[in-house]
Image (cartoon, rainbow, N blue to C red; front, side, top):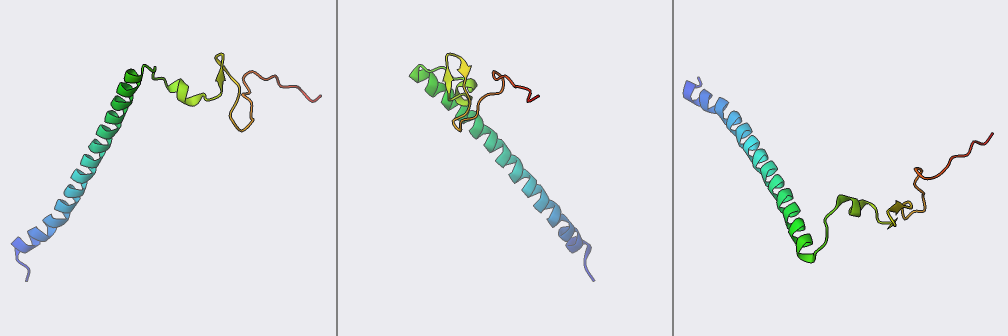
Length: 88
C-alpha cells in the first residue's frame, strides 16, 4: 500500500516540473526582450557616433533616387506610378 506522503510527493513532482519549465520559459522570453532592446540601443548609439540618421525607411528602399522609388532589384516596377492600359 502506498503511503500518503509518497503519493503527495509523486503528485507534486509533475507540478514542480511544469512550474520549473514555466519559469525557464519566462526567463528566456525576458532575456530575448533584453537582447532586442540592447541591440536597438547599441544600433542607435553606433548611428549617433557615426553621425548617421537612423531610419526604417532607409533599410527598405535600396533603389531610392530623388525620393522616388523605382522598383526592386529584380526589375519589377512599383505599380503606384505606372498607368494600366485597358486591352479593349
